[in-house]
Length: 317
Ligand SMILES: C[S@@+](CC[C@H](N)C(=O)[O-])C[C@H]1O[C@@H](n2cnc3c(N)ncnc32)[C@H](O)[C@@H]1O
Image 1: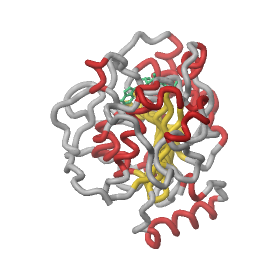
Image 2: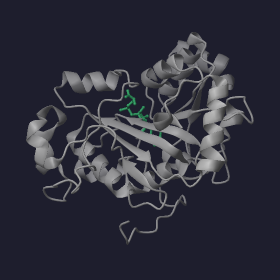
Image 3: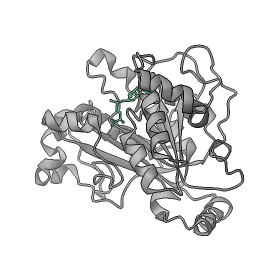
């Protein structure tokens, strides 16, 4: 295991926000949806100070939020769900899986609430909060089966890059909340952000909890890059963030992109990227350490079996 992993703090000190707006003008339909259904679908979050902040003392109990205390179910948490296309489609197709949509933008929150109510989904809740804070302190340790970050705001200008959500600090928080065997899935249409994500995923291998970029998918090595131009191989060198040409790991197992996650439907933002001719890149890392296997994983799988939930153990347990 690589040494010198810097100690990082989860404390909420200086706040760098990955979003520029949390408000937004609601349509009459959206306002009505919030008034009628917000109480059922929106998780109430005590604030630290400003809008979308999370009080350091707040603990979100997923089983209570979904109304099945004592019953462990798979839990997908999507960060920045936007209009909710991806999470709503997955929730409809997987009724035994709980889904939390974490969003800051009021209009998007209202859209997800409206659609959840319209489709009668019992397994979706919306958390109106800055995911960076929610993941750092409020979500329980080892509680989440999958974390999704699809098409996060790209913050393209170099002086804004520090506002990108996918960073070393956020990776710490994701590792904290993932169950053993749980997966962190990402996608972006911005080449430069894809390389930043790749670097972050490479670095999480050094975390004490043990995360590995997904080795079960056909990753490609950088020296094989010429063979996979459709995966963005043409930008392999120039996109590598300050690390120079990256030869990949000696085993060829780490780094690179994952296959498109089959549970990820096309969203408005992905479509915009495709229309603009940008390459879509998926990435995935899996929490690989299993110290809790006897205490956590087996009961989890048994509970899932009892529930009759079809959930691939590698993907979701
Ligand atoms: C570019 S949109 C992508 C939406 C969706 N994932 C998709 O693929 O269509 C990014 C979303 O992330 C939300 N967002 C940005 N930073 C966030 C944060 N720290 N916590 C929660 N949501 C955030 C924004 O409000 C926005 O809706």
